Image (tube, rainbow, N blue to C red; front, side, top):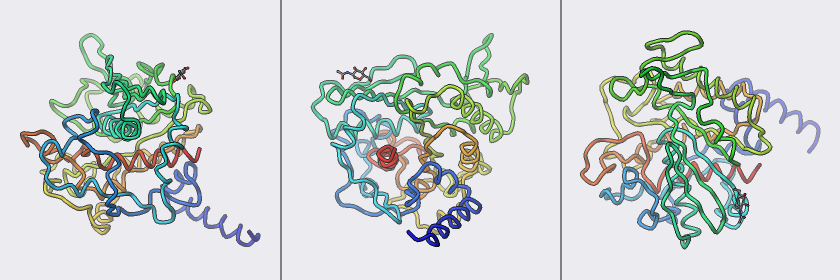
Length: 363
Ligand SMILES: *[C@@H]1O[C@H](CO)[C@@H](O)[C@H](O)[C@H]1NC(C)=O
């Protein structure tokens, strides 16, 4: 490349850095030639990557087809980046990369969603392994794939920071990560996520008090609390993780479609529009109009300050298109309730895992 070509690249890179905060994160984490996260969903007859009836791992709540969902187009969309293709789905290569590895998802049920998707993807390639029942000890669920000696784990931990009982009071500690962190370190790949539980009130709110430094609070701005917790987590990563041994990923903010245009400020407003009856991805204009989720902005801001390499799976925007991908009333066979938060399997989390592989293969 000529020197003028190089300087154009440099100017472009600097402009990107200055004008687009997401690009800063991506520049650090992704192949510079291609932003995997700007793209579109394309209909692909060859999808899904596995058949839901053949995968023994899918929680009923995610098994929309078994719960009677009649339309199946939602299983047949593939994420297509604008300027490149995701790596070919080559199991020999992926199997070689993951052989002998311990992979752990840490977070809320959106982590479980992605964990089960990954389990089904591996199962589709290695269907004859003897035992696919996860063993569960406390918050940790484990699946072992013997042929590849892969240990695939999900640790339920909705806040990442500690939630502990003290004198019968449940305290959410914004400054402490540690209760289960020792187990995190005994892995090769860690994929974190936290967001949805930060907004709960009433019966679903799992804490009584929030500890913020020396202060004990009954409540506080949840976005501020979320940011403090993330900063605690980044400090823990910087101080404790040898990223030559353990690769760290963060599953970005998974959008819900309780309101068609989700944002934290709308939380608790009357539900104007839900995901029920959606059968196609949203149009780009509808996604643009929704703007950027504030939690996603906070997460990207925090990740910029981390010193160790952390790879953001920047799924917020691409998932925002997929109002059709949620269980809606098909989260159970009796069709009770309306789940516009989790994702049907097969479905959107399969694309998240493809992006995880794309990132892994580039490391
Ligand atoms: C399986 O992987 C673990 C690490 O996760 C390693 O300690 C062990 O030696 C491996 N076993 C075999 C049979 O390769």
